[in-house]
Image 1 (cartoon, helix red, strand yellow):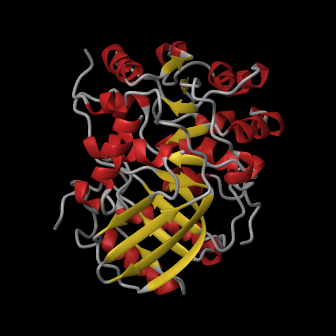
Image 2 (cartoon, rainbow, N blue to C red):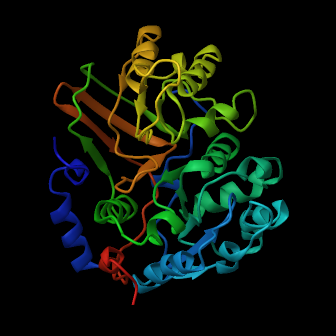
Length: 363
């Protein structure tokens, strides 16, 4: 089987190289980015850090993440956020909330909002975010919002309350600050955020042959299922629902999926897409043969829509970048799966030395 780096769509390496040398159904549907998400001015290189969840314990790892982004030409702001600690969190609820709400007072918006890390705590902020003012400002500016894991709560809430999309992608602490960088992760991050019509492909054989299109949305299964019944879970019909998780036993994953099924959410989608669940050595204590494959087979038996696997994203070293809340189209068959995204906000690569993101360690 090919390695994760071969999951790049055809010609990605050449496309990234060229770019670096030259250097953009029925739901409460987000405003098309092509109309409302202009490319920011070339001088906007600002990445503002968010720390909405757990603390970032290693000062060295925090600093490495900041330095790598700076070496690539980005201006990293709100750096004090990643140094905070209160109990298990990256600051008090009010401090973490202000990382977002303070943006309303600005005259301009950053190029990107980058989550520091996941963990737990974002759900405690959802009721106090000023969606009415914040979402239109970020949408008009074309600000890219990047993260995953517990940050899924913020991403889903912004989509539900303000029609604002985001990106499932690398975070400061675990990815940009990691001791060993993933070239695939960095290349996909660069390509997805600076060029139109991003395509992700996996050679994982699919059990269904199908094509379709819809709004691609979702994220961490534990976080998403916890928002069922709240106003912070988007009401999306005919969508392409993406799910990933980490460290959960198979029966717990099935219980969360059954919750989405009983709430009618799975049945409303056009297709379900599973990413990586980082199962590792996790074994069901009662039945070692009860695996993630068993869970997926059960969900397939209950649904009349296709369920696809192998999306290269999750709590893993080599991960792609996925636009969330934007249109996508898919093609699946026995040879693999292809997803092509469109209408998400892009930013110029000019003026940046993005190849610095591929360096193993900051100088």
